[in-house]
Image: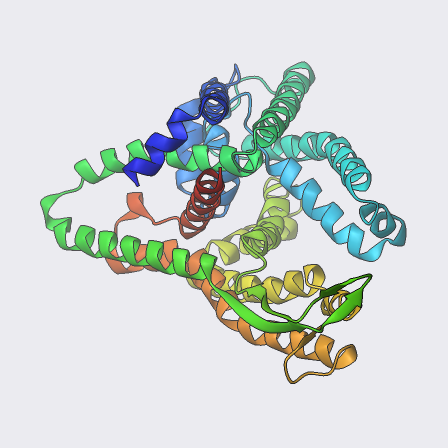
Length: 414
């Protein structure tokens, strides 16, 4: 490993690209530490520590949301916009045809994604401001129209700035820029976790050992599931093209176990976040029955047991849904048939498509259960160890391991 790092660092072009990416990550961390004027940061931190459903949003902002910094929204609006267009490409024929146009179509869809990011950032920022205004502890010192407009402009500009930095990083071909920004935000929270470990009492030593053991086991399982794949044997028939004989090659079609990545967790947290967020707006309503209903909804979703079970089931459901959206067995079977390839023992065409669909649904079950377990892992750890300040972020570990593995593979190939 040391020899490989020395080889990587000895290449001037690769070294300059790595230094550029590190510099951009430093700029991102600096922006995430600059709070917006007029915000009580301490009350805001306490508000987030007492509300688990905003944890994932804080992850995608790199901790900027917890400080309400100039990049408070992070890349969450861009991710939401990307997901929307991924789904639209599947159901809108015009976008589907545009995607098939190669590099031009991809750039056009990316341009539409950037355009949609701006209004999504404004909407999400305004919703967050309204939510903070409902906090029992005063967080925003000035809630005038001018102050809110200034906050929205700042947060929207911060999201566009991070989107631009992410694209600059992606151009260096070290890894996906947006993923690396999220990775940097998660890693930046490690010092505070170490400090929390130092503040633990000696009576919690056993709980700390359990916590660390589960953390190591989680990392191993995440690596195993992230890299896991099912290889479908494929044979290409021999064909004569001109004066050459081509084909006759035995290879395989890799099907990743976790094809959905972290997207089902994002979908699930969005669904869970919606009802209590809407209910927050009606806590101070004039009608008593509206206030009672809003408080009941908030209490319902703050119940740890209900929250954990619903979260787990939603992640499983969205894993199957998203996999069915992004995986196209008919298209794969058609491409194999055009190239003269076939799965051993399976007839080309419809039979191959059905076989691939069945195989993906089978390997999707462990992936769905894995993602569901990763999502509710912090709740389980809190119940087992009673350590509130050190909840393992299963989603954070999934992102960190995935990004680290992908960046490592890219550097190794370089």
